Image 1 (cartoon, rainbow, N blue to C red):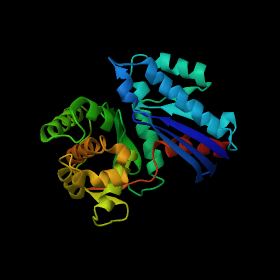
Image 2 (image 1 turned 120 degrees about the vertical axis):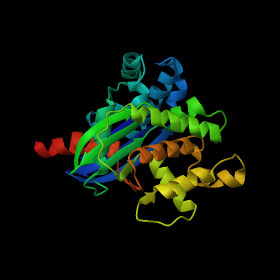
Image 3 (image 1 turned 180 degrees about the vertical axis):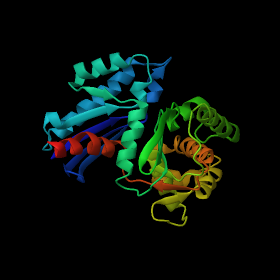
Image 4 (image 1 turned 90 degrees about the vertical axis):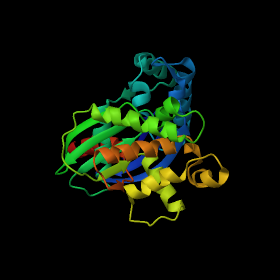
Length: 303
């Protein structure tokens, strides 16, 4: 079977076309658009310009899909924090339906964390830990033991809105780094997370995978899809000014994240500090694969 899944996030809109049979999947096509929807939100409302960015991007994707063996009923679109956390969610969803002919499912923070966990566990083998997905407008957390989620929540801070709220130029200053860290600490302390002792992190999503790629560019030791918190902290310390020789590795590997990667790594570091984590296990799969396995592949197996 073939399915197209579109993830409308705060920083990016991603289209992935999968061929799947039960739990066996193969990516046939992938496209990413750097939409930066956080820039179009003011006083908790998305502007008309932002809404146009969404439905024009989706219209472009639909045109692409017409060139592939994808039937309309197999196209699934879901949205996360960018549309979930605004006051005019219904207006945005209605505008997309009218302009692109697509129904968008706005998933909750808990559901996003759960689906990220479902996807990640197809790539990483951990009995217990904390699933972390740092997006553009929110960060999803799911604590799990014995391969079962025992707590999940969504922090209303991601790499892009952390940049928007705290950073004036491109690379955050020492004062701005501290502001991001304190914001994350405050939000974590407000959560009712059970005290389970030191936990490893299972990291999913573009921010964490980009951090791991950057580690490779810097020649750090490759530990089979793992990144130590010590290595993460070393990278945060390394990128402290705007000089080309300092930011060249980011421009080489992830130029579209030049402004959000450092805020994202600070977020990850504060979450790791909170859970006393020493290592991040990098998962190749995340919320889109979780949606595929949980909503589509599982459903087809039960028929």
